[in-house]
Image (cartoon, rainbow, N blue to C red; front, side):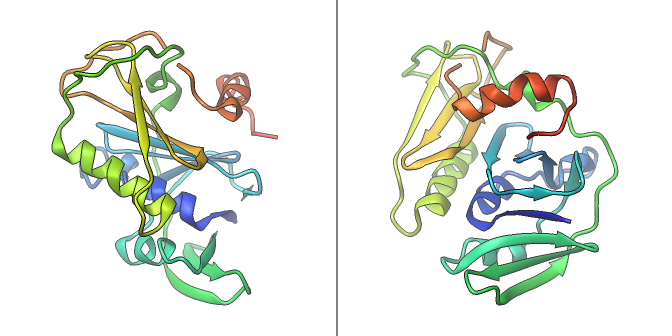
Length: 205
């Protein structure tokens, strides 16, 4: 059983891939108190200090119907149980249920995409799809009013860090149109605390 904050899961699920060849990207990867997803061009990580992840290191899909319910203002908790994804409101009433069967495969080492250092870059080219996804993520996290977001990167070809107004538990790594591996940034403190544990393959505390 896995329990995670509904809004944060909606933000992460937005960047699930739909690619058939890399099927292991077609879901959300849960590692301790983290939820991660990527389509190869953009990667989003969320932290839920109240997460209850009984299964460590699993990939579970969030279909469109579930994603829509997770964005609902009344949605509070997402629960994966027995190949089902259930969405609950603050009173414990189930708002939605849909199938979510575990995806077999190995999720890529997302730590390698998260740089250790970021500078400031103002002329970095991003594809419209990436910009739209960042904007959609900001909208999910702040409701109908689109919250601000900030991009920083080492240079124009490096992965950029995206932080969202009023949402310290979610960040995104956005890949420019042409990007190369760079040195790594100023990610949230909770991720820095998790780095050593993740590197050793241990569960989050």
